[in-house]
Length: 449
View 1 (cartoon, helix red, strand yellow):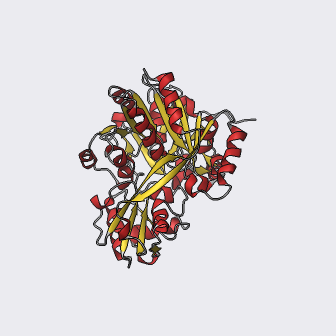
View 2 (spheres, helix red, strand yellow):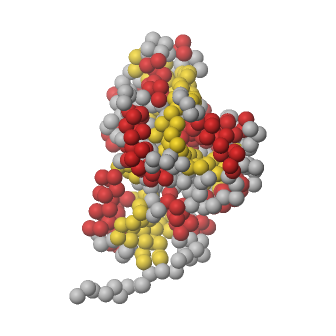
View 3 (cartoon, helix red, strand yellow):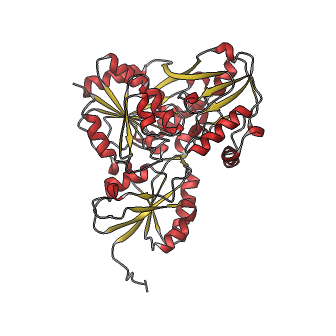
């Protein structure tokens, strides 16, 4: 005989996240109901120091007047037991499918159901034309593609506002809706290095950037000043908004991953357009692998091939020199890349990369222990002040002649580097017909007044 559940009839739900998609799913699906679901809280992973906080009452709504706790995902089984959890919802990104099933097994073996939410059920609709730029993995070049699209739209006289996937690593209530129109706004909001990497590259081009926690409120404010809204996804997450044009960017340096990682696989299957980026440095045969996978799961998608063109501000500083390379952090960590644009620049100018690993200190040592595939470069980790201090000390300790900054921000604004530096920039360029700009023109004719 099946034992009847005599507890509260409401389903007790735990949302597994990383301070982004998890909060959005709660806001859209559960903040105002339904009455048969009781959200007990969130777990957190991937990002340092985002657990042991509370989702504030000002964002949690009237059904949760005390807010909601956030626990470490490491303690998942204990949380399920102590909170009498009935169901766990996975709500974060860039996970290999074997990892998804590992998390599922942890939930199921603890007596809780495991669920995934279809992206369409959490999409907020906009009153303005909206393009979502997503990806198969972290570090494919979403921001480059977003900049390309914004530039093409602005040449046609259309004002674009970019909404960036959430990165709320500080005071959640204060970060509910954030607008970044100037570089001074970055200082005012006390952003991390990771946030600077995503926001600064757009702000310096004159594009207003929104981010935060409450993405319906963010959208309503952004709509007031935009002809077109661009959603720039984080990691390989799916869109928070219902797109008029859904773009998935793929990386030939990780060919095959577009079908192996959640939820990037969903982006590939649902996209109207697939952009295969970095064609200029792609390994032989890798673009054909991605094209075959597109044909297999989404044969009606329109496919474009682009290059990611790297340049440095003063090549003579690094030409033929011994250098240390600092790369975009998330691309290397949960993105799984061994290198980024900084190493590409080093190779282009025949610089010799000095192995930084013997000179790393404290938190960076732990980062490379966790992500052991990283070898020749330093990930620009800066989620909190102590990490920034460790990054600065590590860079300056490496015996080299120059530093290559491969992050999409001016790292020297937050880190004092004692050696000559060059900053790497990168941009999408069309490689072969049809050109991506033709897709933008088609979008204008169909959706923009």
